[in-house]
Image: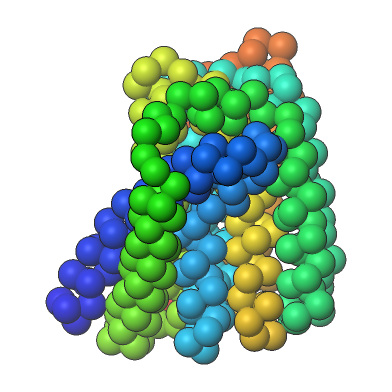
Length: 314
């Protein structure tokens, strides 16, 4: 058991490091090859911020544990809103960017509606995965085309490597990314078997929390630097990718059934968290910020959800 825990922690650390390195090298390669900023933006948005969720989903499905994939997607969405934004709000009021709200919230709503329609039969099949991936590509194009922060990131990266070195580093980063993802899945499945819980529960809790660490670190760092306006866009964008990309990846590898607990407990929890955030944004849109007191609301909700999962798993 101790071996699995150590492997899980080490795997998460390696996963986060390799995802960051892969995104940086992909950005540099795009610059060397004179790719458009839109294409580079898609690479950054698609792989840089959500590579951990994506690869954990793919490998868990490949190894016959699709419950980890759906649990990771839904659990990460819940953690992003309740935990990440909750912690951010406890540090600083959450600034509302009107442009981000109008664009990203509509995209998140559309992604959620699409996924709801596709899983209403309690199945995610290959065709469903294709539909979700197509929707993801369209969404990434829209985000990359309109996001000024992408251009800022592109201009701020130093470009002093040769193309050959960048390609080599990119391949190394990808290999480490895949290996660390496999290590995380192996350790998570081992822990689940040892304590007698389903891979869905592990995906909703340990894996979801671990793969949400980049979002948590980014939002907390932004809040400490008095830039909490970045947090809302970061979380909403990540949830869009989880809803479309992470769930789709597993179904493209193997069709799988959605456990009943997802419909009676987890998916409603995700919808409620999203709805509360949406309502708060609408209410405080004129003030341009969400007060800090609501950080306790989000954190309390996340702790209550974790406790509910624990009670049901006993």
